[in-house]
Amino acid sequence: MYSSMQRIVSAAVLIAIFSGCTSSSEEMPVKPGIKEDSSRQEIKSTGVRTIIARTKEFTTTINSNGKVRSLKEQQFIAQAGGNIIDCNAEAGARCTAGVLILQMETTLLEIKVNRATQALFNGQKEYESLLLGYESLLKDKDSGQAANIKKKLRISAGMLAAEQDAKEAGYELSKCSVRAPFDGILSDVRVRKGQFVKPGDELFNIYDPEDLILVVKVLESDVGMLKKEMGSVISPISYPDRSYDARVYEINPHVGEDGMVEVKLKINSFGPQGQKNTLFPGMNCTATIKVPLEKALVIPRDAVVMRSGRAVVFTMESGVAKWNYVTTGRESGAEIEVRQGLFPGAKVITTNNLQLSHDAPVQEIMDSVTRN
Image 1 (tube, rainbow, N blue to C red):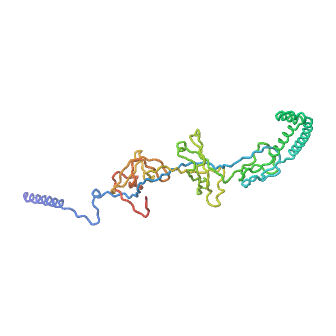
Image 2: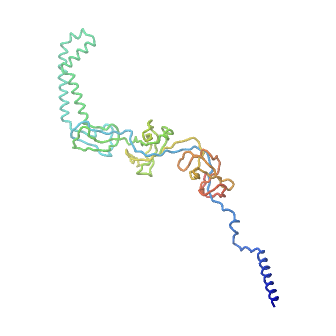
Image 3: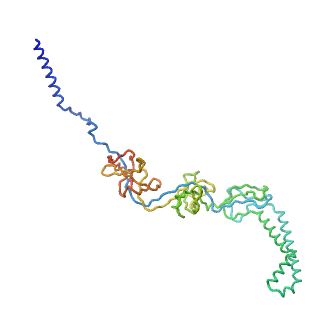
């Protein structure tokens, strides 16, 4: 009986071994729709957009802030004291060259002028009387000697002193009237009719709105690129949506202690109709000076990525990304100059380049926008 049981167990073991060998040697079928193991799949390509690197005229920009000024701007200070009897000064009012803006009380000065005029008249008559007594003496003198004698007679008659008094009184009288030296707009008006002013008091300012400039500061390292007549665009901080054309008018040949150079931009245009008076002295504006450079290889700034502290540009070659170390130059808006490491005609990758590596598979994204 024992041998019969032993034969049954041995047979069962042989059947199990045979069944295991048979199942392991057969390949399990792959169900439809199920992909193979990921290690056997191809690496997915990264979608990118590209541009062709081209050489073209490159324009860099210098940005700065400054204040508007007028080339014709004058502050009026009281030259004489007294009551203001007439005042046409009003902030924002336009005036024409030569028009009377302010008049002070002149009664006492007019009396002084009349007195000096009378003294001059009397001195003239006295001089004429003295001259008659020296008529025979003057005949024997040369022109130089005769002139000296006449001068002494005028002094003796009080004529020279009267002439000086008349001039002084007339000058003091003229300081009581203030007239516009040029066509302009009044600002900072500090006086009114009936007010008493003293010599040295501030009265008002006048400026020419047609002759405005923007005074900005530029780094000494950048000022060497600037030349007169270079174009620029300015925009008021209070109206950032408005822009005005300007040009480099003057470059001050002096570097301040802060390492900055003063540059004046002449405003050529005043924008759309109705915006002419939106610029006035003291207004803060931003300025973008356009500096044309020589031709350069230019690509979008987005095409440059930093790897280990160095600038890298990826190019697309035969469906893979190629790593290129580059040396960049100046920037202008969304573009940057490439000085070394890239050649014209290269297909530069501009998107999805932060995660790329050398020889990574890429696929160009084609859309309706043509990038050149």
